[in-house]
Structure formats: structure tokens, C-alpha cells
Image 1 (cartoon, rainbow, N blue to C red):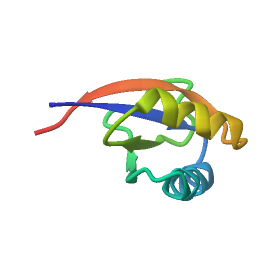
Image 2 (cartoon, one colour):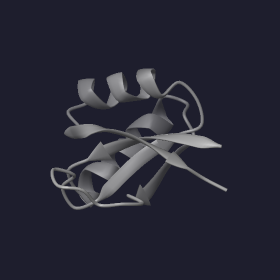
Image 3 (spheres, rainbow, N blue to C red):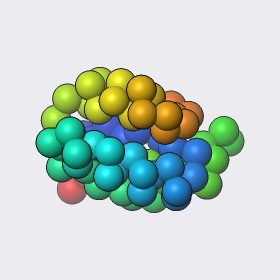
Image 4 (cartoon, one colour):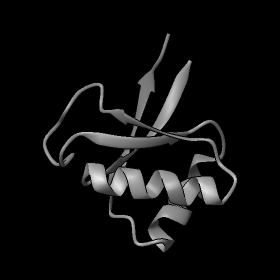
Length: 75
């Protein structure tokens, strides 16, 4: 199974982003990036179980600094 991760610049943005998405009816989660790469900030991401594109738009409109996206395989 694949999971779309929304990479944020800090744990603070991850926590604020999770709260913002929950207010919009999403089940949102915070995780460490499975592999830290250059340009991924402190290595935290937010993910949702559905409609990642809409979740990213909500985060951007809410002032959450997004560094990019990554797809991760989960067991």
C-alpha cells in the first residue's frame, strides 16, 4: 500500500497542519520521513487517508509551509 506524505518544514508546522486538517474533517497523522533527503527540513510530514491534493491545498491556504510530497510504501 502506498501513502502520500506532505513534507512540512518543522514539527510545529506538522502539529498545526494536523489540527487544521482535523478541523476540515480529515483524519490526519504526523510521521517522520522514512528517508531524510536534502531540502526536507527537519524530516516531518503529515498524511491523510484520502484526498491528499485537497489536504495540501488546505494546508497551503492555512499558512503551513510545505516543502513537497513523497510517496512511501507501508506494510
